[in-house]
Amino acid sequence: MNIAIVGATGNVGRKIIEVLEKKDFPIGNLYLAASSKSAGSKLKFKNKEIEVENLETFDFSKAKITFFSAGGKISEKYVPLAAKHSVVIDNSSYFRMDPDVPLIVPQVNSNDLKNIKKNIIANPNCSTAQLVIILKPLHDLFNIKRVVISTYQSTSGAGKAPMDELVEQTKLSLENKKIISKNFTKQIAFNAIPHIDMFVDDGYTKEEVKMVNETKKILDNKIELTATCVRIPVMVSHAESLNIEFVKPFNLEKIREVLNNADGCKVVDERKDGGYITPAEAEGKNETFISRIRKDNSNKNTINLWCVSDNLLRGAALNAVEIAEAYIKNK
Image (cartoon, rainbow, N blue to C red):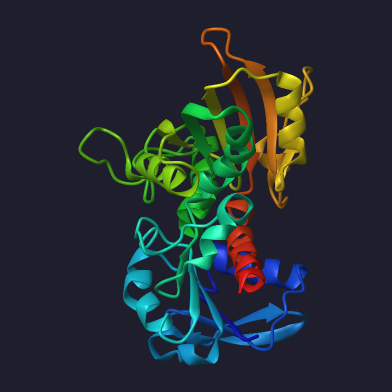
């Protein structure tokens, strides 16, 4: 079938191209679209160069499935136009909480693909995507009551310019030169910023609210969640510290077993120096890695764990392509 990618020249757009090629996805023609600034440039797919077309004049009727990865404003304007001709898989936040748009992580709720009303499928926030594939098998077994989340998110979650700024700031810092932040509210090099996206009325940020609302929509509205999202000076991969309270009693060995057997998860949990996975090791990998699994001794039926995942892959491009695979399978 013919596939289109909007935002093809961005971080996630390029990763979608990479994932489609690695999976040998059944593609007739691949069409790439981006802003007028990027139109005319060429990207490689299966040893062929494909010219990027101008989004403003792109003909969406050419594609059966269209991936959008160009931000909320572009999705707001162009997704409804594309959806008249093509099934849209949208990576932005714009349609995620629309009750008529399924929000999908295939390992968790692929059945929701049977009810597509607007020809639009939403891809969740990258932090949510790695979270729910861990919560799903645990919720099935032990019934999750509450989750407290602290994230440690890489600069790639904000785009290419913030990644470039991390490199630039690191050099300036090492040279003892003055740093003026362009893409962050504070210095990101050798620092941690407890602020991702805009603040909302109750003191939380939109990123934190997204994680809560999206998890409830994907998994179970009855689960209580609270989140603190932090940007750290890492290029790729998001990490999360999770405190998960269950309704039912649990067994740690059973938790390790069910998580290691869950699709998209891999447990690396040795109680010794280096017996865990860090963001640098998760980069380029498809799995969400789970480490530091232990009982919370301060609260009954509660565990702590650490997870880390390549946000450009698991949290965005890979999940988007897996949505397409699940959609085809469910048709």
